[in-house]
Amino acid sequence: MPSVESHTLDRDIGHHRQVQARQVHEVYKALLKQHGTQTWWPADGRFEIMAGAILTQNTAWTNVAKAIENLKAADMLHADAIHQAKQESLASLIRPSGYYNLKARRLKNYCAWYTEAGRYQKLRYWSTDRLRTALLSVHGVGPETADDILLYAFGRPVFVIDAYTRRIFARLGVIHGNEAYDAIRAIFERHLPRRAGVFAEYHALIVQHGKEVCRPAPRCGHCDLAAMCRFHQNLHQPE
Image 1: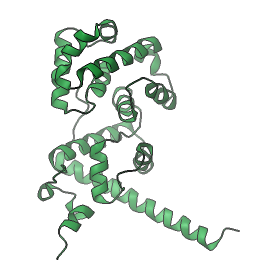
Image 2 (image 1 turned 90 degrees about the vertical axis):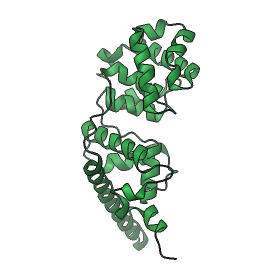
Image 3 (image 1 turned 45 degrees about the vertical axis):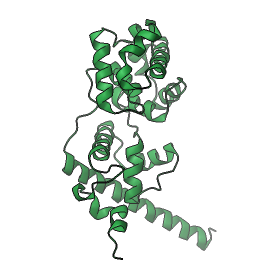
Image 4 (image 1 turned 45 degrees about the horizontal axis):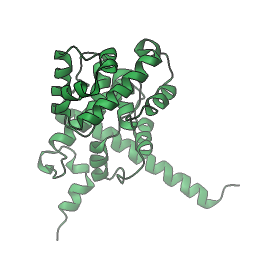
């Protein structure tokens, strides 16, 4: 027979998850009201999303957009072209994205795997777990980049966790902020409808809010989440 302690623990876990679920839903509604529909990822096609996911590592999107335009102008925004390009030439084109030598190697690694695996035409039939494992095996592709590609290029219902997610939801008190990537991802995937469109919109809203409002120095006076934010409440406690 389960002990009283185990019943109490189960009840506490259940209550905690109910609170988390409510918070996750409330934040989504508040961000959507404040920022409106984002219609994101900005790209003309699936491969452009994949390349953008790699280029956006550790840099602002405005810089990535310049690198993408350089690749387009050189007719290089294709897996074959990048795979066959000299690394120095590729690095020069993507220079605006920062870490351009490293990212050139990563793009070439990705395109080598992508072409060998059969590209989107074959990869679209892979299960999400198999595809995620394969993406993570490509040198230079970490969990966030893999999930960007899965969600936005392949339309798979996986939630992307980035620095904005950790900052915003740690300040709200939903997470501590230093949890493992997959532990945070599981919170969103557990409490939201498992639909790629919902996940894509929510992540885009988080990015927008993190860039414009919940910055390292937060603009709490411009934040629709302030009423539910533990960080904001602690800042304004009476002396």
